[in-house]
Image (cartoon, rainbow, N blue to C red):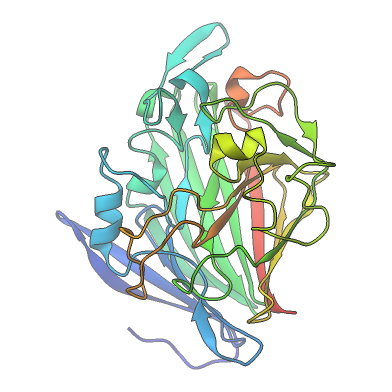
Length: 361
């Protein structure tokens, strides 16, 4: 693998492995600030992301597998999937009952979690090898991924052409831009499912990380983790992260919603587009700031991670070893006309962007 030594971000490509006769590549994006992101064309996975801490030491701050075998095994229909770093679609999060009605037609989806469709179904976007094109520009480097989802894919209507761009700039910002078009009415909700541990992947749980979420309400869920009713105010609940609060400060409180989710696995209704969330590891000084054009943010506290999952460092991932901040539309929106719409029609373009910035604080 070759990378030129310049003062601007660079991109390089290497063979990561093969699935049958299909090559899987890893793209390395590096900037002068010491941040290196490695992206797979399998499922758009953020396989690793190295960033300096207060002392200048580099650590990989995202959870993942060291080899292709780990991702292939995790993508099996019978696996307890964790979606490390994956690009999620056609529909991120859950659609209740694995069905929805659009324009009077009921569509039955691939059911892969308690009778619901989760993260696109049994064979969502994360299971496919995408077409990939590396690029550089004035102050960034990245990779453009493209994929065509055929009509009826996992039960979703319409042929959908998707393009996703990962770009690392000189200011330590990894942006993910999403774009999709369809030839028939359908629903689309795309996100990225990276798990973060700013102290370093495999270093322990993230309960001491300070978390801020710019949202005055969240979506309570039922026993299947489907939103029940309207968003409710976070004030006076363990879901109030409007001020920096340790992730673990209230995670063990016997609140009915925390018991249902075995921790945090809920959608926050963001106050407005733009700044969405910030996480801060006081030990290393690393800060992660998230901006998005999406209306919601799913915060998941890694409740079902287990020691059977061995990460890139060779260390096991126990419960709470990482957290996810998934910028997206609300869960089950196709069945909730009172939620922001996820309907995409011919002639329209689905377009969103989420930016993850790493800094020292």
